[in-house]
Length: 102
Image 1 (cartoon, rainbow, N blue to C red):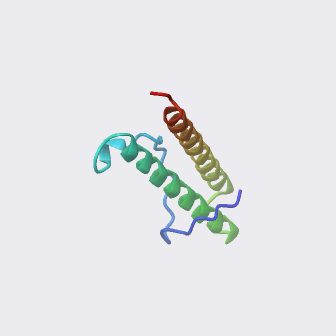
Image 2: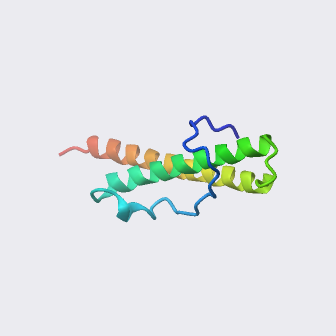
Image 3: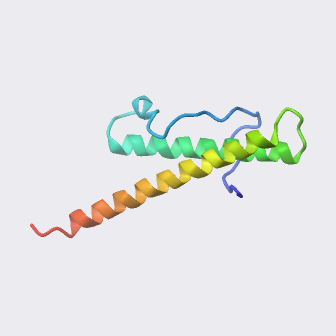
């Protein structure tokens, strides 16, 4: 899986096992918009970490295993797919509300 997000940090950090809504309480503000913003930031971090691990494996860094990189890539992919499904549901709900007759 090719991830096209820019690398955020040069150091290798382990992939956090945060769920997508786990950081909602740390957002400025509250509500669904803050939760969705946090979910996007978490997915972006996961993708960046997976990309960094992938580069380290390609450079044959002995501290990074292929399995670790593959797991990070799968977590990033699942997080992205979950976020995409939530976005699609939100767009559908908005469309349904806008098409309601008053």
